Amino acid sequence: MPTTHQPRSGSLQFWPRSRTKRIYANVKKWAKKDKPLAFAGYKAGMTHVLKTNPQSKFAKSVSVPVTIIECPPLKPFSIRFYKKTQYGSQLLSEMLANNTNKELSRKVTTSKNKKEIKIPENYDYLKLVVYTQPKLTGIGKKKPEIFEMAIPNNIEEAKKLLEKELKVSELFKSGQYVDIHGITKGKGFQGPVKRFGISLKSHKSEKKRRAPGNLGPFTPRKVNWRVPQHGQLGFFKRTEYNKLIYLIDNNLEKINQKGGIKGYGNLKNEYVLIKGSIPGPKKRMVIFTDTIRDKKDTSAPEITYISKESKQ
Image (cartoon, rainbow, N blue to C red; front, side, top):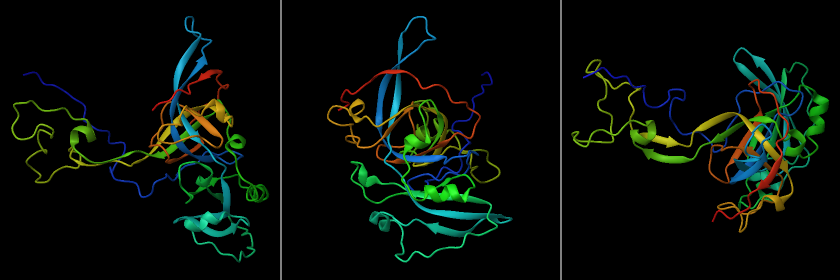
């Protein structure tokens, strides 16, 4: 028989294949900009839009799938002062906001007596801690999520951010590229065919058909970690780079579908339309940030139609 070659099944880019620790992502790397760099919203579902295509000689408009993200305003919780050390970043102190929501007590323990802190002189960078307001949506949830976002290293500008709500239309714009940080759908315990994409064996094969042909060489007497085997699939933290924002709007009549979005309901806040799909199920929080790869923003696409047909 001829010698055949087949690439390995399953990418080794992500390892280990294990569940994430919490239901929303943490951002490890930030772009260097002179404004707040992140926002969070709740994935509502998908629809399609028609946009003009001036480059095409034939079609006047093209149909593009988009993901709907509902973005209620974020509220600041604190400003954190960090210093870089040889053992990693060290938290020096934290300046708390004065007016916080009562629902925040479901997530963290807050103190009624807020002390005035002295701003450290030798800090290296700042982070703004914000929390979501799911009570403003219709997903039936009150407990907020808390995460850090990078901000410019200017304490006066940071104090201004600490006193107001943040809206997505103030931080991002249509035609801008962003990175999406989310947690994928959990699929539980799965076999190697679904988990790694290996081929089914012949119907004449002994014993199992949906299993790898062998577990590796006879020596050394152990199974290599590269052998595709069964295990946990899904509920992974993933980042998708350079996703295009098609539209940021607060006109709810343009987006709410007949009978409500399937599995979500009607939107009640500002929303963002992202080109294509993003990881995670409906009602799960996603974080989008300024892209860390060199991708120049484009002009906002001209959308002529947004589908509001029921997906029931």
